Length: 102
Image 1: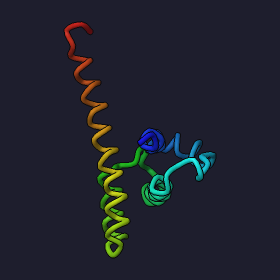
Image 2: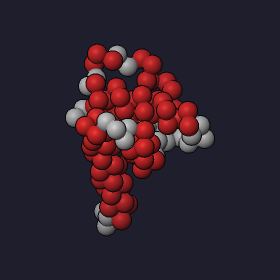
Image 3: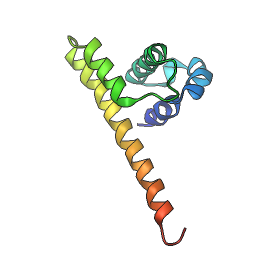
Image 4: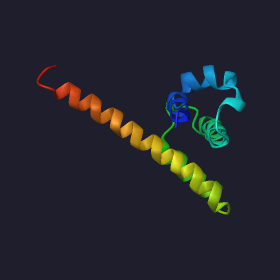
């Protein structure tokens, strides 16, 4: 799931604008390319957001892909992985901040 690192980095608008266009499509999984396309839709719909809100993105996918259950589930699973990764990262930051050795 190294593509999760790419998706995590591209969630920030500044990285997305600078890097997404240079990412060779043949180097990433097709589902990763689809999520990147959804990031484009997200940033067009919410131009004032600096980071993709994964809950909003999941809602958009649910609404717009209501008929295509298989593809929708595949994309929502990726978003779920991204959410868990973000929760773990934030948890580690909080624990290290409160560590007695810090």
